[in-house]
Image (cartoon, rainbow, N blue to C red):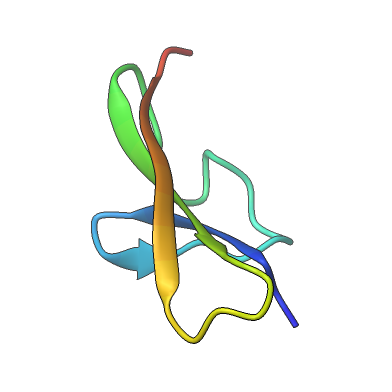
Length: 52
């Protein structure tokens, strides 16, 4: 199962796509969401600004 998801504007990013495909640019906000082992829900790990 996937433990880490990367989300941009409420859309989960696919592993095989590039930042350019998603039009990620300077100061785009990505949300990293991690499923905790044994947990039933999701836990937001961090929100970061991508600076390209």
